[in-house]
Image 1 (cartoon, rainbow, N blue to C red):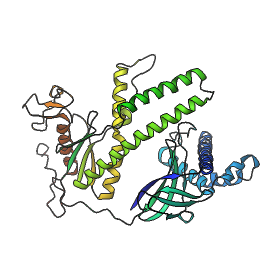
Image 2: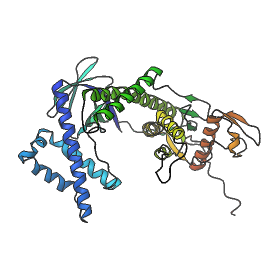
Image 3: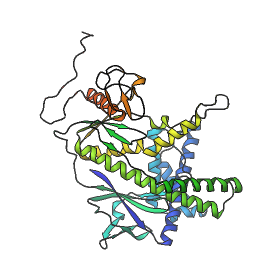
Length: 405
């Protein structure tokens, strides 16, 4: 099975500068190739990877494009392959540009024959990459398989390398493990149908205050110097803000990965709500003709949802389920937080507060998130049409619709 291994690189000053140069070249190739594809579409024509790769090879011979020859050719070709795949899957007009300021530099070495990894000592390893030479990285775990490709990227001022590894492990179906429902919330990140609560504070109060100060400093530098001018103070504020956000993102990703692995190891089926996080966190400002309502309240809710990392947790859950042989079922989220799990009566008044659920029909009382997780589990079992997941047990199918008979 293909899996990933990510390590912290220890670039020298020359290697870091060259990595920035390669990342800039890949970004320019992506943007140029995307604009070329869109121009062809405007004229009713089409251009694919083969033709773009041929034109790029010709452009390397031009003295004005000598910077293309400085970058490894396989990384530039892989950038065009990624662009071709993105355009085929999402459409040419929906693929985004790569920004110099908002997109972190990243490039991939697709040929495993050009990648050599060896361990130096207990803490350090070394990887040899084309035109970068030997690069040391922190050996936090064994590679554990055959390397298929390697991706170098920058995050929060640090450079990392990610190996795509074939570890030789096949997913094993879960046997006899109970199902579970998962509710993602704002106060508690993850609540399960068996009453477990998983949550973590990703930013300390001091970091939250420092984050606000850095954002204010960056905003003031933009107002003073304008968008077209650069200043050392603005660059310093952006660097500090990027490092702090990277630290918070790392904690959020670590929490999501650990919680996801714990769920799929202990349960054969995990039912979650099919939430449209992008739509839920859209701005409520509206337009001048139709201004939005409760904009500040909606902005606070958006920050709370994004802080808990709902989308990242679901991604980690699906990856962990594929690796451990569990099943992830997405259910309709409508009325899961307002429905009583005991009598199935749905009423908004039953949700007394964020944490208290008291049914107005039967008086059933429980934690609101746990009650919602139980409803999600019931909906997930209805989708699968099974009451148990044990291998060799009887398969419980959906009961027939007696009213329609």
